[in-house]
Image (cartoon, rainbow, N blue to C red):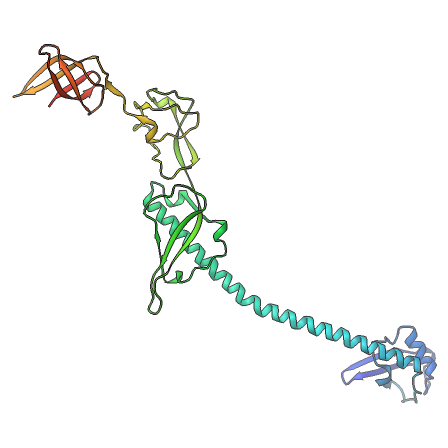
Amino acid sequence: MQMMMQQAPNSLLTVDLPLYEGRTTVPASALNSAWTDGCLPSLFRLDRMRPKFTGPCPAIPDLPEFARHESREGSARSLRIAGITAGMLFLFAGVVCQAAPRADAARAAAGSEAAVLDAIRARLAAISPWTADQIEVETAARSRGQEFPGVDRGLHVLMNSLPTSTRNVAVTIETASGEDAPARTFQFAVDIRVRATLLQAARRLPYGRVVEAGDLEEAAAEVRDLRREYIRSVPEIVGKVLRRTLAAGEPLTRDCVAAPQLVRFGEMVRVRAHSSGVVISALARAEQGGKLGELISVRSVDFLRSLRARVVGPGEVKVE
């Protein structure tokens, strides 16, 4: 016999009782045996179920006391499980409802931060010899998570000179004013990194050496000091004199070289003078050392008097 027990209008529980096939009545002991064998789980309220059979409806005696007791315990356990499940679903729904606006706010903040970083990089490229693709700007640790009110209206980076450092640089940002919102100013800390191709010393170069093309090499390097003027072409440094010793791989800057002295103190120089299309040349002794284009004092050997002349070449000056 196959017995079907209904707990709700759309919920049926089917139990096979093969020993009672063809019989019109089922004793309570058989139902209890089905329950103890696991055919009828205690999760269901057995005393509340309405039995249904595939054959004629038999008379089912009342369940024993212990079966009703087990049914009540199963019902309480079911209620507890249902309550915990409902609570978890409620909490999950709340988390989902809060996560959506937080995600939108996070995306908006990331877009504002990217706009600020792009503006700072563009400003650095405008006031430095470096291009925007050579400059990297990242948010410093102390400004992570910072809000950017009014950035969507436009912004202006207040930076007129290059910073002295590249880490934790405080940059002042001014937002544009709107119809109902005034302009606002805030500070934003960034880390700056510049990588470019620089001229470096190919080997150790001593103080006073006249730089030659073989002394130099080009290499990609990180710019440590944004305010220094780095030499980036060979012709502008060849022939210059080193003002200090350079280590191998050290970038060359304008303050580490100087124009060579073409005239030294006490040496004999040739003095030239132009008058009415006539060039007069004489010897003189330099009373000062001088570089190309500098005015120095020389004393004429013939007339024994001092003259002011401009250095125009090695050992050569011109009276103006």
